[in-house]
Length: 104
Image (cartoon, rainbow, N blue to C red; front, side, top):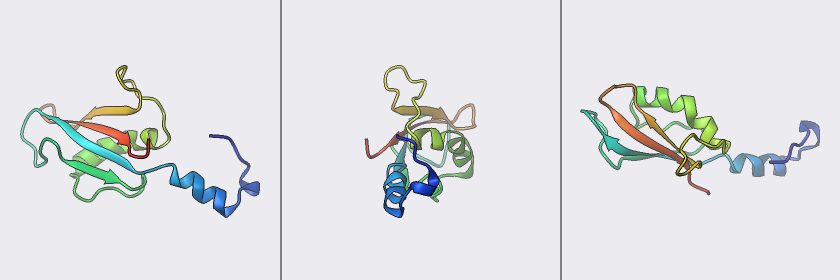
């Protein structure tokens, strides 16, 4: 993304830049213990500010740590696909979730 000074950015340019931030999909890819969510459950962040209301608060807490990294396209640590993040919910017997941008 090319840097633009705020004072020279038009409203159209701002909206175009913002449109590239989302949406972001989160999907459960592994379930180790008991959880109200099920394998294959998917939620979508329209933007990093629009949290999916169906996700539990514990999962949302962990997602908050990584959602902007995904939104901005920062590469993950996943050597097989740097465009996705795989994270674990807070429970040691919880769930594994995959985060990825939908518009890529």
